[in-house]
Image 1 (cartoon, rainbow, N blue to C red):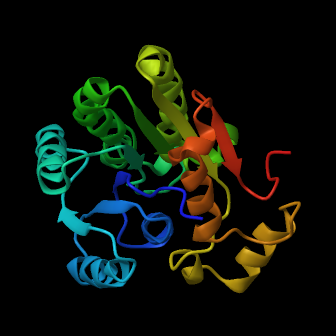
Image 2: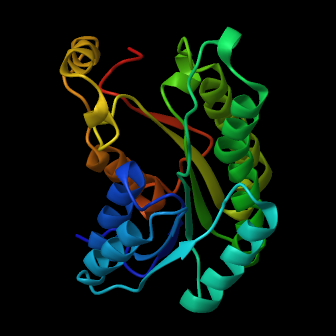
Amino acid sequence: MKLLSGKTALITGASRGIGRGIAITFASHGCAVAFTYSNNKNAADQLEIELTSYGVQIKGYQSNAANYEAAQKLVDQVIEDFGALDILVNNAGITKDNLLMRMSEEDFDQVIEVNLKSIFNMTKAVQRTFLKQRHGSLIHMSSVVGVKGNAGQSNYAASKAGIIGFSKSIALELGSRNIRSNVIAPGFIETEMTTQLSEEIVKGWREGIPLKRGGQPEDVANACVFLASDLSSYITGQVLHVDGGMLT
């Protein structure tokens, strides 16, 4: 059963990791997919080719969601190219980890700009379209770290906690227009980034998770499908934890 047939989604930061998993899963459910990438054009081109096999419209855009004007231009171009937009997945994000005593102002500011201000930029950019059509699903990617914090990630945790507060506020503002705003908070998800960690560190993470394993990008993607589809038509302002029980 294809849960997203006839819908169009814009996914930021989708050339790798969780974003890539979301794009693939959305396309497999019949969704037309516009996605953004920052620098890796080869990965974006490969994803375009892979997604085309699902028989839906696909296009990648090199864009910086942290730039207000770029976000506005991106959404205008996506609507021109696809003719519609029903779902926004705010997934783009970075880390610049360090203890507070060693963290530079630049590293704090950049993480807040890319992770949090991009959510404002992109949501603002799609708002007019969603209001006009009186429907839309906003899905914002937070993190378990945004809920419980993590030593050495005060900038990242602050940005991800801010996403939750932003999303809940937008849910209250736009709910009367049938626009839903929800958050997904992934836990330890195994991607190409986690392969750079030592096996000992990964083992320690897994042992601390009630399900005793890391999650896969598909686990997050399936949660996104639920929040993007009509199955969740009465759900807004919520935080869905995809973390194997880490916060239990």
